[in-house]
Length: 264
Ligand SMILES: O=C(O)CCC(=O)C(=O)O
Image 1 (cartoon, rainbow, N blue to C red):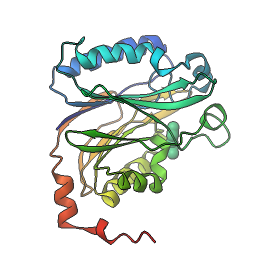
Image 2 (image 1 turned 90 degrees about the vertical axis):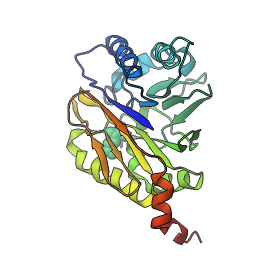
Image 3 (image 1 turned 60 degrees about the vertical axis):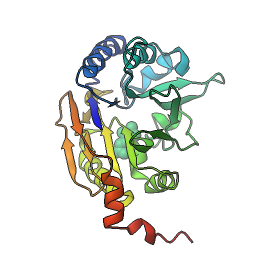
Image 4 (image 1 turned 180 degrees about the vertical axis):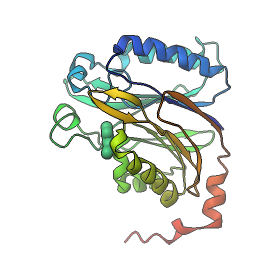
C-alpha cells in the first residue's frame, strides 16, 4: 500500500486561489510516484485559522472548483488508473446556509464519502461559532481494509475512534491544521490512537502561518504497534511510505487486547 501525505504550506501570504492551483499540480506530480492513497490536510484552501475567509469561501461540495480540479487529477482525466484521494477538508455550505468543516474522500469505486467534523475547535470562536457539528461517523471500504475518517481536534476524543473501531476501522485517516504550539500533543495522541485501536494511522497536517497561527507539520504514519513509520518535518513536504496493511491483523492476533474490551 503506497501512501503519500501532502503536508501543505497554508500561509496567510498566499491567496486561496493561488494555493489550490499550486496544490493541484503537486497532486498531479504525485501520480507519477505510483501513490495509491493520497491524503491532503484540513481546510487547506482557506486555512484552518483564517476564520474571516470562511464564509466567503463556503460553498456546496458539488460546486467546489478545487475538488473538481483534483477529481480530474484523481482519475487522470477519466483515463485512469485512479487513485484513492482524501481531498482534505473544506468549508461546506448546505442549502440551508449551515457551514460545516467537511472532509471529502473518493476511490476508484467512484463513491464519494464526506465526513463533517464532529468536534469543533475554537472554544468561543472559529468553528464553534461559525460551523455546525457533524453527526455521523464515516468509514470507507478499500482494498487495504476499512478506513475511518477523522479531522484534527477529533484526535482528542478517543470515544470517536472506538465508534469507528466498532464499524470495522483498520486504518485511521486524519486531515489536520494542528498548531505548532501543541505539536507534542499531536505526536503523542496519534501514537495513542494507533496503539489503543491497533490501526495504521495516516495523519496529514499543515505548515506555515494561518490566521496568525503557526501550524506544526509532523504529518505521520504510525503502525498498529505504535511505531512511527515515517514523520514529516516542519516545512512543506510529501511524506511517502509503503506499508503492509496485513500488519493490522498480525498485531491484533499477536496482542489480542481488543478481545478484552468490556462493553457493559
Ligand atoms: O486540539 C488542538 O490543539 C488543535 C485542534 C485544531 O487546531 C483544529 O481542530 O483545527
